[in-house]
Image (cartoon, rainbow, N blue to C red; front, side):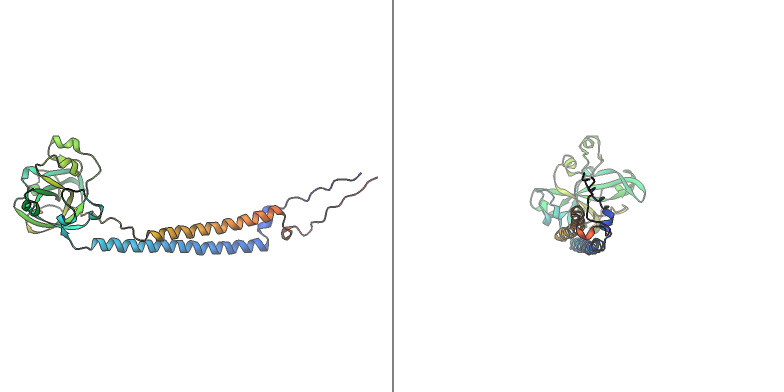
Length: 276
């Protein structure tokens, strides 16, 4: 009676990996993947460098009249945010001044003082319009420095947009609001106002900042230049991952197929015996 030969024991995966052929290919794959990963990081550094340069260039633009950036009839364009501007006109009546609560300065809570400035250009056009100026910070609304200014003024500052928090419910409670929002303030004055705030940094002529702690102007938004370099960076990382994956796929295929190069040296051809 002939006996059925038993198949040789399955070769452990680790023995296939540790053969000179597949160990060498793994080292090569890891080296290639490492180079590709470095190239991906380099592309991101190029992106950061281009972005920083573009943002710095935007911040260095000389101030221009606020009226030249956008009209009082239109909304604030994204390109105007954080731009340095000049504004010349006459301070609006003291009754139109407002305060923004819960503002920190050097570790203390206080208020921003916001006063409307009636622009000369709008007065000349016959349709008075104003821009809201963040004049500075005070510890309390009764601080002498918070007194509304009067007369003509020429100042420089940075453009900032309305805050997200809704403060419409504060408008009927007085002149203290919780957030800096044009949609709320527009109902508190009798003239048109620009859809933006000017955070004052200096006064060239007239009064307006005496005794107030200046509010830091808004930082320029990041100018995302060189986004193509980010795509290149991710491509290099995908190539690196694919290289390692390809090595693993090829090694597993060879292991499952029983590649002769990986058979144990003492493997012998199966034989059978015949018993009477």
